[in-house]
Length: 617
Image (tube, rainbow, N blue to C red; front, top):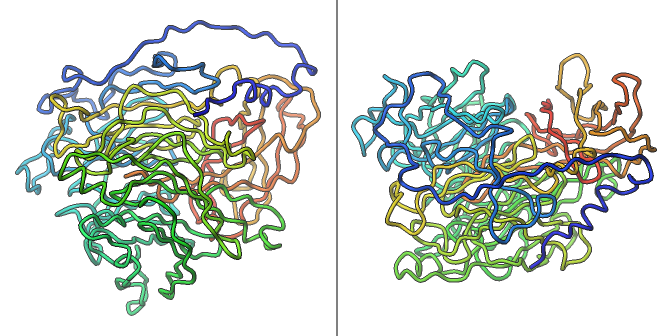
C-alpha cells in the first residue's frame, strides 16, 4: 500500500514559488478530538418532540468549530486528508444523496421499517404505510451545506432502494422504490424559502422499479433501466406523441441474460451517457453500448475478468474525465476519448454464503479500465491496495478519483459484510507509474457499510453518511450499528498550506443571463489567488472542470460526469486588482453535456477552489 508522497505533492503545489516571492506561514495548532461510533445515548428518541421551529436549526460544529477526527495511523492533512464530524445524528440514515444547485443536499432513507429518529412538524403525518397506520417521523431531510443545518422533508411512499436524476431545470426526478412506492415518480424542486418539499406525481412508472438506475439524456428525458425482475427500460417524461414507442416499456433482454440464479448480480446496472448519445450499460460482468432510441445493441465489449461487479456483488463505476479540445478524438471535437473505470465487487456466491451461512468471502481487490472509443477495446486490470465491496467512487475536481466506504469481505445486503474499510483511496488515472496510482488516505472512525452514500460538495469536500446493514434501525447489540451521522472528508488539496495557490472565482462572464451558457460558447471566468503571484501565466498550471452533481446510492453515483474544458486564453485584468481571467469553450453538444446545472471548478497547480454553479442550455 502507498501513502501519498507529501514531498511530491508539495513540490508540485509550490513549484517555482520560492523564486517569485517571500511569504510568511503562520502555523496554528489544532486540538484534535477523537470520535467513536454513535452510542445509543447519542441517538435522539424516535417518539420525542423536536423544537417546533421550521426549518429545524440544530446545534452544529460549524465552519470554525468542527473538530477534526484522527486515527492512530493518520498522517498530516496535506498528505492524507482530514475527516470532520458534521452531525452526530440527522435522524435518518443517508441511503440516498443528491446535491442541488442551491448548495443543499437531499438525503433520504426508506419508510418501511417503522419510525425514524426525526419527528415531522405537527400535522404532517403519513397515513398510508403498511408498517404503521400513522407515521409522524421524517424519512428524508434537506441538508444545508453552508450552515451545517437540516430540516425534515416528507415522502409519501416508500423510497427504499430507488433511483434518480436531476433534470435540465434543476429538479430532482426520483423514481421507484418498494411496495407502495415501487412505481412512483417524485419531484423535488429547490427553493430559497425553505418551504419546498417532495411532490409525488399522479403519473406512475409503467412497471415497478426497485434497484433500477437512472440517467439524464441529451433531450432532457430520464431513462430508467432495470430493477428487480424488470428486464426493460422506460422514459420520463413520456413523449407528447401518444403512440410514440418511447411511451411504452422497452424489453431489454441483456438484463435477463446477466441475471445469476438466486443472486441476480445485475441490479443497479452502471449507466454512462457516451459523447455520441448512446448509453454504456454494465451489468454483472458484461457491458454493451445501447442505442436506446432504436433499442439496438451497437457493440458488446469483452467480459471484465475476475469478480462480479453489480448488486449485490457491488462494485462501483464511473466514466473518467472527458477532455474537451478543438480537435477531439480522431479529429472530431464532439467525440472525446472515453474510458470507463470499475472498481471492487465480489465473487459469485458471496451473497448466498454471507446471507445463509454467515461466511464472508474476500471482496475484489481489482479495478478495470475500458477505453470505450478504442477500435478494439480491452479491459486493463489494476490492483487496489485493499479488498473492497460496496465502495463509493467519485470524481474529484482535479480529475482524480476517490474511493471510500464499504467492506473488505462479504457482499451488499443485510448482515452480509464484515471488516469495514476505513481508509479512502486516491486514484490518479494519469499517473504513469502503476505502482503510484493508488494512495492510501487517512481513515475515518465510523464504518460505512451497506446503505451508505457519499457525494462531492461544491467546496471540494466529500459528504459521507449512512450505513444500516439491518432490517430495522439497530443501535445496540449489533456489530455495525445503524449510523445516522454525517461526516465530511477533505482531500489533501483542502489543506490550509495550499490556500495561497487556491483560486477563488469572482465572476463567470457568460453574457446577458447570469451563469447560463450555450453550447460551444466562449466564456470567461474572473478569479483571484490566495496570495499575489507576480509570475508569468502558465496555461498548463490551470484546469477548468464542469462536474455534474450525481445521485448517489448503493455505491453508484448516477449521472456523474466531469468535463475538462478547453482553455483558450489566460490574462491579467485591471479590475479587480491582481485578478486574472481564463477563457474557455463550453461543451459543444448535449451528448457531451446534457442540459442542466454543473459545478464549475477552477484548479491551479492541482488545488481547486470552491465551485460556481452554471447552467448549460
